[in-house]
Image (cartoon, rainbow, N blue to C red; front, top):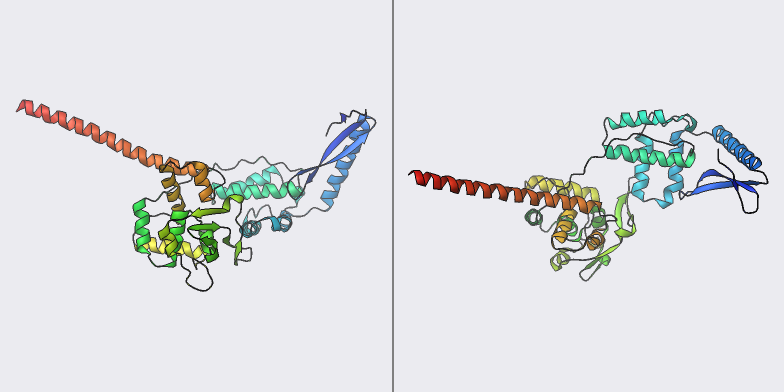
Length: 351
């Protein structure tokens, strides 16, 4: 139970946690009385009544998810709403029928263990994060301390210049070529490539201001970037700008949906026997080139629309691993050459 604190006036006050706002801020209710025990009694009485009232209107976790999405809908991106809706329908089926008052740490841990058997650690951690957010809003008395699967280190692939040039030459004159050029030389995401229109281009500068995503009704819609980092102005090479010609009067530069960009990319990669990397890895290519040029990380992050440098660090580690392998090969070759030279001299002395 919350303890009373003495105020400068001589009265005693108790603050009781009273939930959260829609923005996630804590709400407190204050109880003041001349005597310490009276203030604590008023606070305890309120907490007991609130707990009883909450239980009398106890909804299931499934209904809590639906209500959470309704409350947050106008502050979330369409793709996030779609993912939350999917989670409400498929994640933690053992928990969804339970009333909030029946949910325990043991039940949550059991549900997480079941999900971890056939889902990636990232998927499980994301699902648990949403569950925690829903419970914080509708059942703040439930404090989770769940053991989650350890995240796996992301595998980063950085295409080489030769691989990118080979890819571009293989798809010259296609809609996919424009998307590849935008990703490899401007670090645009596939959703940003699909949303780009002629009026977003000014001279050699591309103004990234929107993205194409699926909403919860599985319809492609144009939305603003998820974060401030997504808004950026990117100066492009002249040869890229020259190829960004809309195919129709719609003004869209790449007349493909994001998922179609991925599908076409996989088809081309297979057809021309190209190395196995993703369309998204083209963004890693540009970051690695800029890093090798000595461009400051801050600018690389701004150009790529990254909020944090975690992705850059993974790219740099990959690049350094490649460099280390080359250095180790050079070391082995040096020792082998020295040994061979020594053996040749030894053989000559015998002769």
